[in-house]
Picture 1 (cartoon, rainbow, N blue to C red):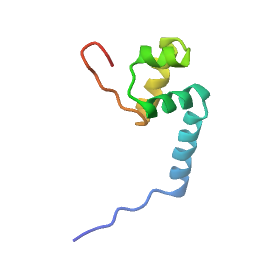
Picture 2: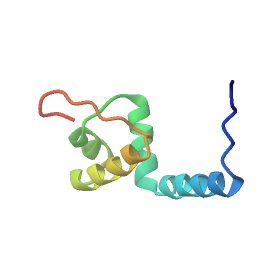
Picture 3: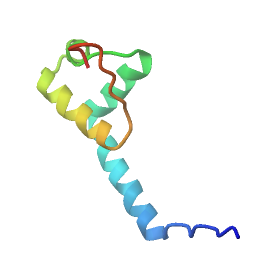
Picture 4: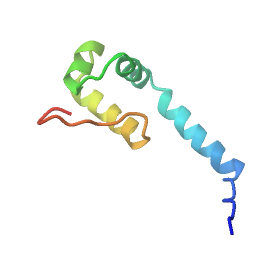
Length: 79
């Protein structure tokens, strides 16, 4: 027999949505998403385009990857 999976409670959905909104509430991360929407870039290319340190870009990308908003692609030593 087929059993329907119960829907997550509203409090869980609300909490996850609030976490996502907090993640997107940072101006640098919004700028990163906009840059990546235009074309695929590596960390150094993003850092140059946004005039940010590469370490900061890398940290923001790590958070976005952890929430599955961006994907990493490796090509040799480039990520």
